[in-house]
Length: 190
Figure (cartoon, rainbow, N blue to C red):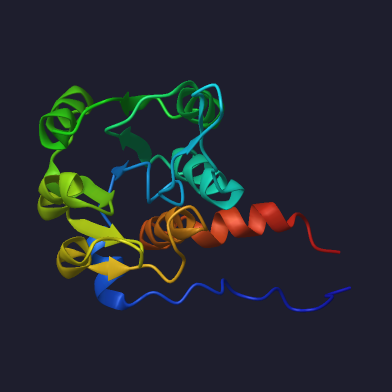
């Protein structure tokens, strides 16, 4: 009949973080140190290899399903990175740029959005201009000290090990989408 009660979401986020994130419509991500562990691996032939977390990828997909655009601005460009972002359906990407603020402003203009609707996650100095303007700035614990100093939230998980998923879960919770998406993932109850 009723079965066991369905547990509530297990994500505890501070009220001030949820308030800062409630109007977010776009989330900017750095790649190395955020979506990856920050290491750059090269094969003997010089090919670049990257390790991505499946948890983080699912988080980006969930953002899109909730109407929050994931966007990537990265100083690097590589085939593995392009393949991964394409597989995740990330449509707003700027590769090979260290000057991230103009790239972010161009994306915002194209989407008709402004800084109060922005959340951002980064780990090093090139991310500071975007993080400093975002309504919600997040960093992984392996971020540079100056980035952690301006972040509104430092994730428990490290970059490339679920930090981006934690950021996504925060945005989904703030926007009122998390429980609905979790219930849908759990499927119908007997």
